Image (cartoon, rainbow, N blue to C red):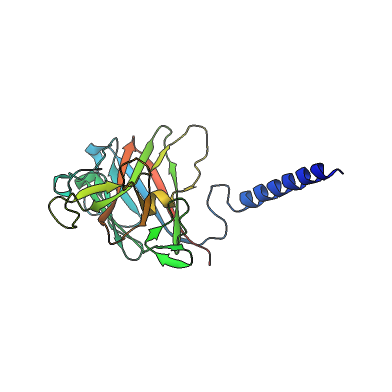
Length: 244
């Protein structure tokens, strides 16, 4: 076999082996194989006239159907919250599972810094964050045509560059989880760790992320998921442990 043909054959063999290995790393539903499930969360949209009542707990959060907004750039004092899932550090737990009734739910999840160059850090790689504790996989179930558009946001310093002052503003990640439930296809999980566990910031106003921070980095506060819905969307989030 001529040299160039041998190199081409070996290259194709490597590509095919890599593809097979990659396919073997996930189950048919899109979840990774061999990674421990730490927690699962359901986020279910209801018509505004049929919101559940009271502080729901368990593993589900109620949000309002057919709601879209964009809080980016609003001052924190002027923000009217709706379908905001406030995030706080601690063991996995739904603290308040009803954002449909009063606009705000509360979800607790563990600190999950990135590992960059062997060092644990609240600043993560912009392109390829390496999470230390867990990742989150998400999918939509329910009726075709329903969907979500979820962005991780927080409160940051305003023009005075000082936190916890009157001009503090809402900042949102340049990334989001957008998905519409498709007819005729089985729901599959996709890795949404970057969109849901970090805030990717555009610090120089060129619409491109140039700094990624993990949830609960001290440079921001009041982290939340801005949960936009199309129809009565039903989302499932599976938090899986990062392999040792």
